[in-house]
Image 1 (cartoon, rainbow, N blue to C red):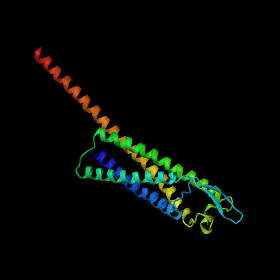
Image 2 (image 1 turned 90 degrees about the vertical axis):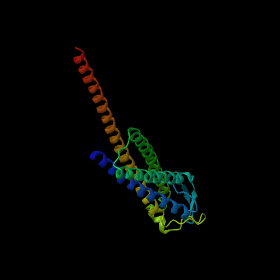
Image 3 (image 1 turned 180 degrees about the horizontal axis):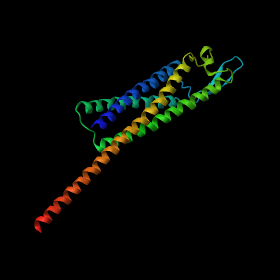
Image 4 (image 1 turned 45 degrees about the vertical axis):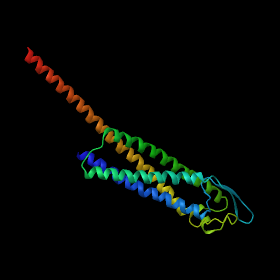
Amino acid sequence: MVLNNVLVLSQVTTYLLALLLALCIIFPISFHLGDFKGHCLLFSNGTWGETGQLKVSWASQAFCDYNLAWAGLSLLVALVQIYRFVIQLCRVTESTFLSAFFDVVLSLLMSLAAITGALIITIGYQTWCNAIMMRFEACEDATINTIDKADDIDTRMFYTHFGTAQFGAWTAWVCWVGLTMFAMLKLCKYHQQENIRVSMARERARLVSDRHSQISG
């Protein structure tokens, strides 16, 4: 029971972190889309004109939408799981083998979604910065210069937005990997308990059989 409570408390704490980190992705990317008039800078490229303006070849908004989607799902799952485990702690009950198996599958799928999102943000943002650094020494230099008057984008906060989103995405992935490990530990514990129950049932049946044999003899 003590081990189970420690695992559940660890899960609740990590789900709380995953919830907060999801917000670190949702808010910055949402603000970014507002500043960039619905354009997503991830994987966007362009060429510099003689006037110092960047003619942007905008990539699909789906790259930003994917990260909003998986972060939103992460937020929802974290809320549901926190409620579920807090109720479990208050009622001093244990999960079943089936629910522990479900937690393993869910956490594993969320880990895959998280690392996909983190890679999209990191690689896509680097593509954008490579275009910026064809004119400036550092990517953040574009935050103090008007680089695209044609699209009327506001570049003042993109560096902060995607710095926060990258941190949120990679740290959220670490949290989901941790949650996968916690769920697997619980699954192994329940499997071990089931094996002990089966062994005890067999031993009890053997003792009863031996006792009957002795009485009959």
